[in-house]
Length: 187
Image: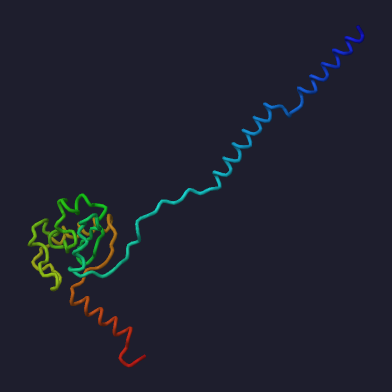
């Protein structure tokens, strides 16, 4: 019996040794899952998601009534209009200012008098696109106050993308700029 007891003790010791070995198939699988999870978590935290593209930059420029006219929202284009010399990009309000909207007649135009008078009539718009800008003659204090309210609303809501000048003022400015760039005396 001594032999049997000794043999049982040997087998028990071998099973205990093999059971305490950390390199079992199950431990190998669990270690692999743990390493993969750690790697994917660390590698994901180091990668920065791409930033969404914003709208194209808006360039401040000088418009005349004729050069402002194409910005009327047709063919999903931008919608600009002027109020007292400031040109606003009202494209985010396409449902109001775009084709078919209640203020569509102001798109691509100087809307100053129409807004001041709360009128959408076409006679409120400047007919002569190459003539002087509307000087707002004949508007009373109530109309000027209403106009100021509209201006404040637009300033808080929309981007100013330019200024509106008459064709004569634009041409005079262009001549002055050319004269400054190319002085007659060669300096």
